[in-house]
Image 1 (cartoon, rainbow, N blue to C red):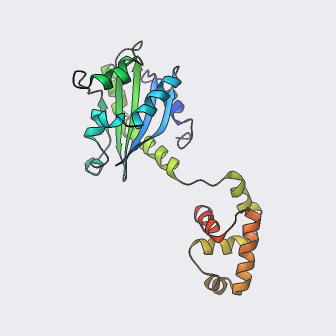
Image 2: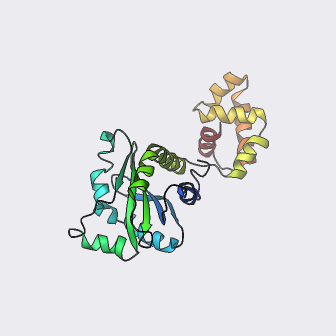
Image 3: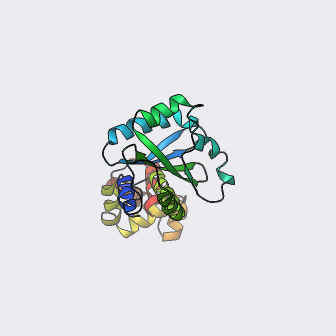
Length: 236
């Protein structure tokens, strides 16, 4: 959970699952109506291989994934809860896809947790190398038992990734460099108040509100009120 929203999420997940199931690659992909994005990627030994394949996957090949076709984001609203699905690929009907994503990179098996979202569907996929063999029934049962938790972690991670972040130095300045009056003015401006209404709320003249706003802009190193409003919305 501590790694959610960070680049360490995939590696931390592999480590956490180590006592339950042995996997080579861990990939989290967000599928939206018109495109797909990589949310997390980790590999025990061949990260360059996993990176190359996942980039090709989100580049367009994800549309050929039977799991994506079954649980596309257009159908995610009807998916009431996360599901765990093993590899279900007809090798004969999709020879190129199977060769590219399984035979050539040495992947023996895939187990996916599908987590529905409001505007996307998250696919957290665990891969075994050919040296590891296929997932055993015990391993599938273990992953299924923790399916809801894994889906919640995947959803939390993708939400944190999509949340606008504030540079650390700006956050420090907000809390230490600004006076309480400057922060109060910035917070109220961030809520959409005008200099006149802020003045009435804080017993200041509109001109004084503008002065406090200009001081806050200078101390934070930002250039205009629009940036100040966005920053206040995140930090206020």
